Length: 222
Image 1 (tube, rainbow, N blue to C red):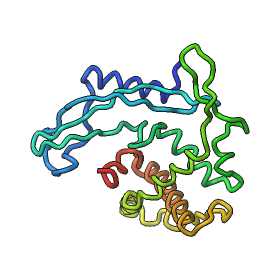
Image 2 (cartoon, rainbow, N blue to C red):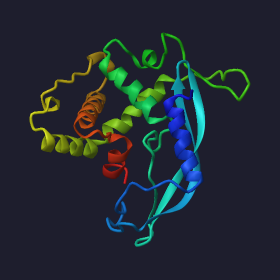
Image 3 (cartoon, rainbow, N blue to C red):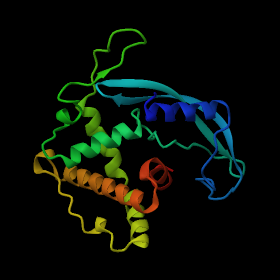
């Protein structure tokens, strides 16, 4: 049985290749118009990485490009398993990042280990393992993305307040261990990232949806 993340990627890629994929947007990201005017324009290949136990595995996926018939804008609408500008799938990026934030004892180096052992890149098919490992610097860079999604975080909290003004997300204290940062700028970056993950959980509980990647794309990457 295929891992769910792999099965999800293969289903999406096949739908793009067979031109049966559907666009979830009702209006164009640029002009805000065009209900029913968004059409499949092109496709492109993208290699994604995901972590399975102690292996970084690679999967080549077709991504769909959409075009607005009215203003001519073209854009990629990322599927749930993918994040713009990131090679690793959403599940891997968010899981490792959130684990680092929530567990005070974790350093960047420890957070990218699996059971205390390095995570190696999968080699060529049938070949030996790649000597490269998942680097702590990769995890470090991911927070530059999450910390920058300020508009996304605000919009998520606004939706939560509209649905449940008494939600615990507004009273929750989310401290960052002082040994996880060396500057006030980094402390704020990690703090905003942790607040984003907290809002993500509450949004899922209230609306059954996720910030990543749809809301983040519409509010921050459009």
